[in-house]
Length: 547
Image 1: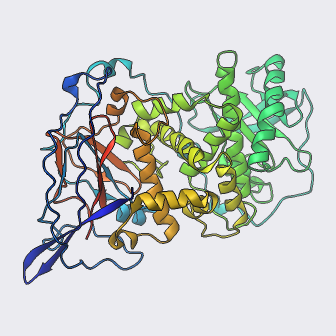
Image 2: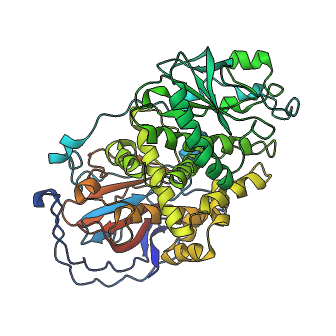
C-alpha cells in the first residue's frame, strides 16, 4: 500500500486560521506479541483502537515554496495548524527530516535542519539506558575520525593538474628502507620514521617500524592481500593510484591507539609534481606511493580484523584515486565512501564486522538518537563512531534491495561522470534497478511543499529511500537487517525532555506516554511523523507538518 504523506496545512484568511487537513485515517493497532527481553512496565501502552473519525474536508491549499527553497523553520500564526494533529494508537513515533544534509556546507545545514518541537509532556523519558541494558554497554572505543586524520592539510596548495613525473612507480625489495610520514603512537600528529620492507608480495610491500611486524606475519598478510583482497577490491572498484606502472600498495605497520584498526590518509594520494617537496614537507604528505596504515597491535590477536581493515582502506584509496579521472571531480562524501568501504569488507569477508558495527550504532549512537543525519560523517565527538554502524547497516539495506553489485555501479558512475557537480543522490539513483525506484515511489509520496525543497528528483527519491531504510532497520515486519531485540530497539530511543534540532536525513524515535502522539505546534515545517506499535511495526500512514 502506498504510504501517502498526509498534509497538515494552514492558511490565514481575514485574520483567522483555517485548517487544511488531508490526513489519512490511522490504522488499528496490530495484535501485540509478547516479548521476553523487555519488562512489561518498560513498554508504553496503547489504548484500544477508537472508532475511526471522519476525515475533514481539505481546505484551500497553502502556498508552497519556490523550487529549491526550503520550508521555513520559523513558526508564525499563519503556519500553525489548529486542526487534528494526532497519531492514535501508537507506542512509538519516528520523526524524520526529509531534506538533504550536505557536509561542510554550513548554510545548507542550517536550512535543512528542522526543530522537533516540544514533546516533553507526551514521551517516555529515561528509557533507553534503563534496567539490564546499562550493564552490557561497553566502553567507547578509542578511535580517530577521518576529519582528525586529515586535519591541517591545505589542499588548495596542491596542483591537481600537474600530473605525475615519469611512468614508473617506486619499486622495492625485501630489506630496503624508506622514510615515510606516519602518525605518532597517539595518532595526534604526523612524524617521519624509517620503515623496513620485511616482505615483497605480488601486489604489496609490507613495511615495519621498529620490528612492529616480523617476516612470518608479513608473509601471511601479503598472501591474504594478494590472494583475495587486492583482486576483489580492484575488480569491483578499480585500481589504486601508483600501482599502474610496476608499483604496489605499501602497507605500513606501526603501533596506534587501541581501537584504531588502520586508515588511509587522503593527503597521501598526490604525486611529487602535484605536491612539490616544500608542500609535502609543510603538510607532511607522502607522495608517489600507494599507502595503507595498519595498527600493528592487532597482529597475533585479531588477524581477521587486519584483513578486513586492509579491504576497507584499499577501497578508500581507490575512491580517492578516481577523483583524478577528472581534475574537477569532487571526492565522494564521507558517508557514502564509508558505505562503499563497508561493501569492500563484505565482499572479502561476509559478516565479519556487520554485528560489531550494529553494536556501535546501538550503544554509541547518542548523536543519532538526537537526530544526526545518515549523511553526516563529520562529527568529532566521542560518539561519532556510531556513524559507522549507521552506514554499515545502510550498505546492507541497499545491497539487499539493489543487488550485490550496486556499490560497484555507484563507484563507476562517479568516476565516469566527469562532472564537478555530480551528487551522491544522482549516483545512487542511476545505479539501482528501476523496480527499486518504483517500489520506493509507490510507498511514499511527498507533497509539493516538501518536493520543492529538493534540487532534483534524484534527491527526493534518495530522501524517500532513507526513510524506508530507517523504518526497515527497526521494524520486524518490513525487514530484518539485524536480529534486534526489543531492548536493543529501545536503546535507540530519544528519551530526554529537551526539544532538539534534527538534521536533514536524520530521525528521532520516541516512546509515547499515553498511546497517542500530537505533532507539536512548534515543530519545524516539513518534518515527517510515522507511528509504530509496541513491537515497532508501522501502524499509521506517514504524516508531515508541511505548509
